[in-house]
Length: 166
Image 1: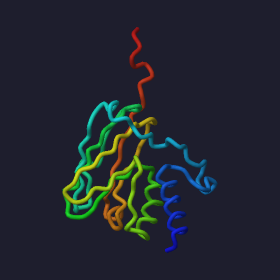
Image 2: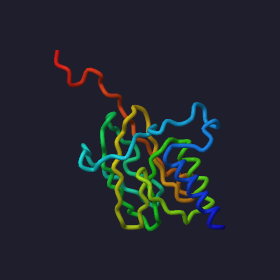
Image 3: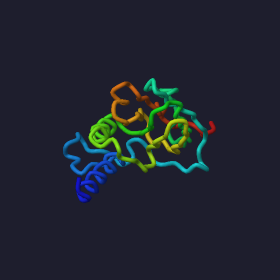
Image 4: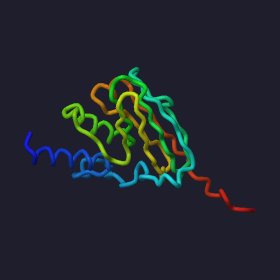
């Protein structure tokens, strides 16, 4: 692979991971830049959620509930013998990124919505969930996503009356 091809491919992967697209016309309505939220500030994290990744191709827990606007510090431990990662995104973004990863499994990531963790190690993601709805996460190492290594964060809408005194 030429250096130019590699850099073009790397730019495409980063664009997909960031929730943008070079040709938004191929997606109904395109993507909002913050469809899954935005990188959080560790000092503003309201809680820490510990996630374990195993060679059984599972996240524990695989379902997490947060509130809209909440900043969460994910401590992600790899209890397995294989490299694993946690990547936050929409289902479509995760599937697109996974296809690229299958073709280029040696690719490394350094984006704020993901963490790659070597066996026996721990990593972290600090994320602010700005929109209500579902944010998916998955391990995009080749074979892991297909084996079911995925989960979801359910983001509850803010109560529009919260904090108001009657």
